Length: 320
Image (cartoon, rainbow, N blue to C red):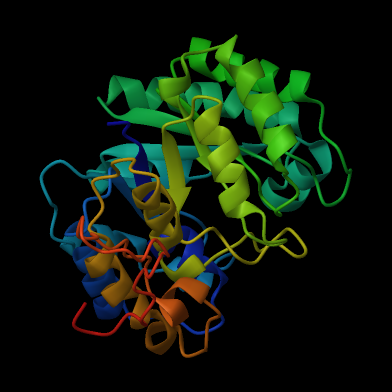
């Protein structure tokens, strides 16, 4: 059986977009619940300026008090040297370093040029490695920039190769504003295969235009086995217009389960958690999978003459 790995990013990438501040205790409970679902990694928080992203001002407290599940990597986004120092003090398992593939988005998101970001990330990778902590480098706008339009695949691959040669454990190709389509995903993934092993590449997809699952399937068929997902589809980028809506981790798990691909994720447990997310963020969310429930294929008796698919499409409920 094929196998993919799903990283849960809602506690960081999801909550950073919310207008309400989710209390620290609720964040901890959210991460602890997700820890029991079978994710390969959970992005717990970001060590960023509280002024820039007040929703994550309690990063130290959350990371210090979560219940760590064996076999799960607990990661945090780190934008600069001070952020790395804070993350290392908090005993993070892995740091997520970020820069944009396009100049305009890098300036909007990080307030620096890409050349400056490249040099800084290589320093941070080395510093984290010296502390015994791995680095994942996320390349934002890898499939297109809301300010510049198309981003050359050659430039994305140049950055990926430089970061891996500099010591990064892996690269995440980010569809920051949902500009990817299956053809562009296949093309970039095939290019990435010529630069580094695909088991070190993660796809981070947004469902801004409804193509996230199609793009995930295209990535999988091209050789990707690692995906980011966000519980109930929370998230986006505060510096990218129209970026709301990460692909739901439950939607990814459901897609691959329907295909007979192992994820290690307990889908029923995940759906139960997702039903509580609207109360967590104090707003309604549109989630087709939660409305319709997961596809459950029936087992037909050999004496059953009805060949139609009567799969159970009943809604998920709190006890699922």
